[in-house]
Amino acid sequence: MSSVGSCIRACWLRLRWLTCAILPAALLSAVCAKATQIGVQCGKGCAINISGHIEDGDDRAFHELAAAQPNALVVLSGPGGKVVPALAMGMEIRARGLRTLILPGASCASACSFIWLGGTVRLLGKDARVGFHAMSAAHPGGTPAETHAFDTALIQYLTTLGYAYDVTATIVNTPSVLVHWRDAIELNANGIATQNYP
Image (cartoon, rainbow, N blue to C red; front, side):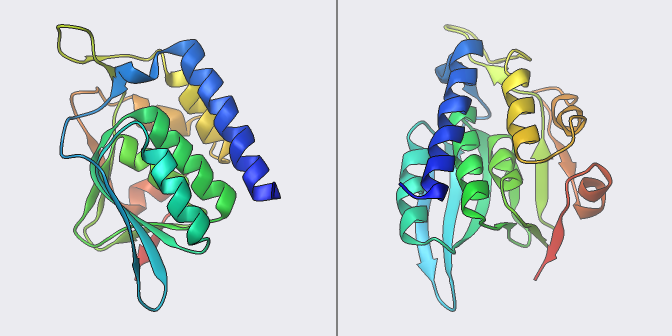
């Protein structure tokens, strides 16, 4: 197994242990929307496009595409979804040294933003939006409710990626029913280095 493959597997196993120990993955989600669409588009270079609601198994689909397109740009949009596959994708993006992009006018919130944070370079198009909020857990027979039970795993994820500990506060201090949209200026001021695109 290559060093990248070993790193991805080690990070995934550590992340899986943390999330299973803290909160069942099936309970972690964001706002419902259309199912995820993951595909590759090639021109001068190749891009892996991820849009829609992140679901269980999307990390495996992404892994297959990333293995076949090792230098692809990861283009993101969507309202969020399941946290565990999102963090797994973010870890793989960082392990492979890939860049992430939100295209001009597009938005990427909640679990989608966690994937975007995995980029070695994080790009934002004009009027693109990145949204953060606290996580929610779906309770049987009820509506999703805010939970901070997963914050420890999120801190582990962010610090593994090299972010300062207080970046977590930037994310979880917004109630789960709201979204705090941040631009490049605010992201950079909060320790999330961002570059403009193009």
